[in-house]
Length: 269
Image: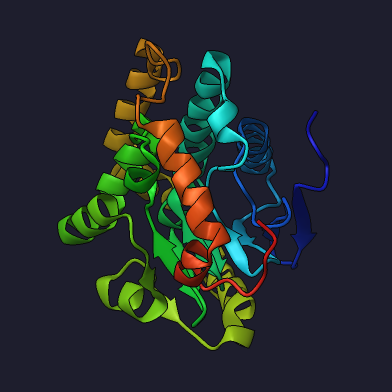
């Protein structure tokens, strides 16, 4: 069952809508959460009064990615469901025709990083961390996130983040262009809203057309792959190493290693 409270909508006037990701405690990704997110974006795309979207999170962790407590128990149907959610949810964000600004003041890790990478502009605070931990949990990238990462990260950042599985801090992310602005912690959301207002002033149809010019080839590759069965990989998403790697990662988190990497100050996961 979908929860009405997973994503909270606020209107900031001038056509700027804030979507606050609100799946406590760390916005862990589930198939339902991702599909709900994609459906909300579809609705916003057709609302004429909406001119820009700002993504935020009220938690110390922006999004921790896949729920590693739940994932080791996925059967084949569960694996297919989360792959479809990752592909569809983030494709809807990447292809959203209106401006999207993400405000990050916490860790955006693994699947959670795609709320950042698929946005048009990224504003972060000093507590933010950015990483792709899939290699550490024994999971290959579904086609949607993979193509979005290839399209939005420089080759060296792609190599480092994907092959080490280790996060980078906000300063490093700003230097490499993963984020566009690094601002004070208490200014992150306000600055993101200001940027969204500025982007919303552009001619709407022209903005959408240019965004499609930039991203259209990537969108088409993802859509073609999904039509060819990428949402339901033969044999499932997991390999022989995945469950043990996930359990090891959970154990590392209990001993503080994962929490330290993510810059977390709570014990909620």
